[in-house]
Image (cartoon, rainbow, N blue to C red):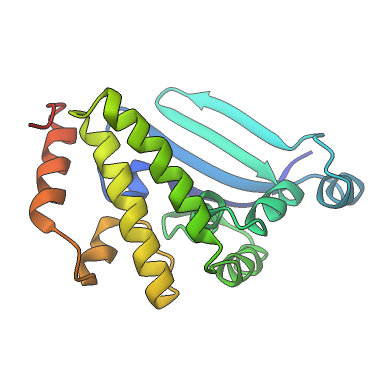
Length: 185
């Protein structure tokens, strides 16, 4: 039986880009002590991920052992989930997971953002007019600069406005294109 640790909103809603077509819900759960130890220490796959679709909601919950392994890599996607401020459910252990996530923000995240941007630049070369790809690249770029300069791990575009390199005109244009499902020029 799964016991939830926390459940948050992730994806476009977390980034500040309203997207009525889908909602990404992410969570962390724990099974029993034996399975936690197996998943955390021995890298077992048992009960590691619960993935369900509920209409427009994409729900994924990670077993705590797997989630902690990913945090410690460090993996920015998992740090982002742990630090999401759009909380739907929080147990008393959520604060502990958030503290671990804060402690995982380090310069090694540079490699995550570098790989993420490189991957999306390849997609950009195929579909340069897709505003979603442009926004993903900008978000990773801004997130990396903010995190590496200040130690603050934020995911939403409003948090990036404090950066000297932030370009509100470009971001607003890309938001408008994405919301209205128009290609960029």
